[in-house]
Length: 317
Image 1: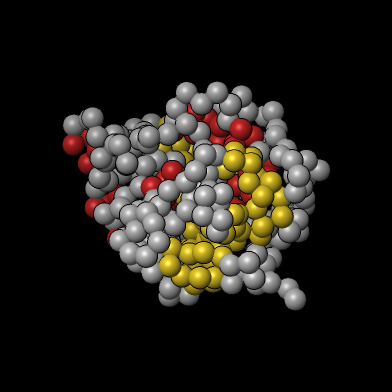
Image 2: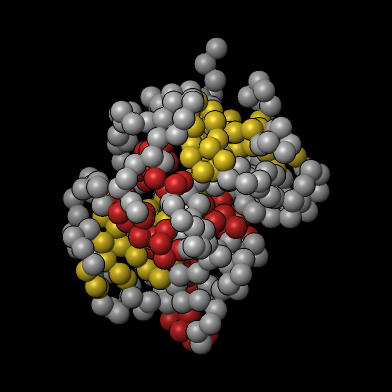
């Protein structure tokens, strides 16, 4: 019998062109001078600036990957961190509304940055009114004190008293772990993980039933409100011998959010193995297309991995 995706229903002013496909958006910029794009082009804004991961290199790799796709136009805005004067952070005010998708590549675990209420409400309204939000790896560690953010990401890196977690049993039925039960969010060593998709979500339509993602952190007991959440794929954790979600989406107002633990890039990490993964790159582009409400390229690349080994690309170094 065909499986369906698991759905948890309640439960300045200056542009600097770096290359032909993306720009830096200065901190005080409203992004209102965005060049005209065709209806088929996807306008994507990467937000970075602080993380306990290598956010600079991660952003570079993301841009290199996306530059291979003519229909994705990428801008970058770098948030001031906690080391700058507070007035500098207060002046930073990206205009999310001129984009189709916002990709967050930041977290505040060791960088106590609090965005202004204006920026927070701007992102909330962007998604609620139909925008797409891509939570890139450690961004689901961020902003624990921001209620709407927790609703947008569904689950993230939190203590067990924070919210619910989700397990997938061997029959692909969802089990909700209530607040306080189980463990805090964690992960073991990075592994080449055999991942299984559930159902036929547009992001994954046509892909094999299972494949090996390279260099994955399997988040155990990711926590949050877990409302309006659809689990796309899962993998078994070695320590607990339980199936935990790897990718999920959240419906927030009229918009959609894609969240996963994929794409790890640690500071001083020798090889960006997870970002080189052909499966990761394929799904990242598909997720961006889906979040933007565009037609998804559902062709399966020849180098897409199977169930035995990883498949790495050499387009980033």
